[in-house]
Amino acid sequence: MFPISDSEHKARRFPFINISLIIVTIYVFFLQITSPDPDAFISEFALIPARIDFSNLTTLYPFITSIFLHGGFLHIASNMLFLYVFGDNVEGEFPPFTYLFLYLGSGIAGALLQYVFMPHSEIPMLGASGAVAGSLGAYFAFFPHHRIKAVILLPFLITTTQISAAFMLGYWFLLQVISGTTSLGSIGNDVGGVAYFAHIGGFAFGYIIAKRLPNKQHVVS
Image 1 (cartoon, rainbow, N blue to C red):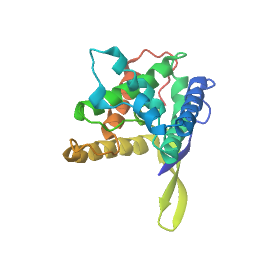
Image 2: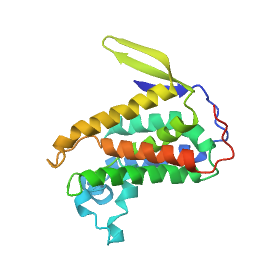
Image 3: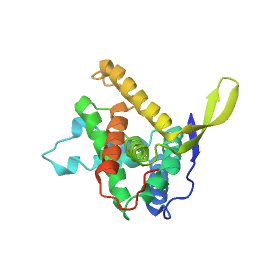
Image 4: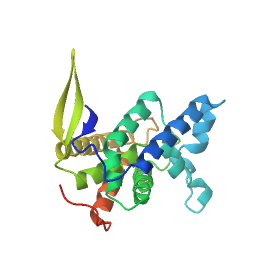
């Protein structure tokens, strides 16, 4: 199930930050895949939990830089699609540049939560999923009654449908919680996979910020 658009196509203002984030992320991915040594590029800028030392600030910058790396074309395409559909309206609900704080803060919060469960892993963590999840959490808080047009992929059939934002995002979050819980048994085996707890942490951070940050522009829909 992939979102195409939401029922409120027009944001309160031009989503400069959201579009800039998409452009910068695509540009960094281009630098990544065209690097003379992509593995070294990832090793330098991805978040590798075993290298984190909270007494050494220079080891902490990957909590931000890893947000702009991706594991492949499908990975970045899905993240940027969700960000494009949900991020513009969320940005419009905040004062200028506050959305940037929410996005980066969600990415950091998600990475921190994932780190808690795998602090000794040598597997690089990368991707905007936690940051994008923050936009989803804020959207869930602001626009639960909006409807999302989504593509449904079934065996031998591709169709579209309208789904309430509350259902779609609530289902997505529940799926992350279930998947994260069931993945706990494999943590410690140092194998790659989906960072479900980064999704959970990012979503929760975005939801809390949307609920708690003073916002005079927002009208509950």
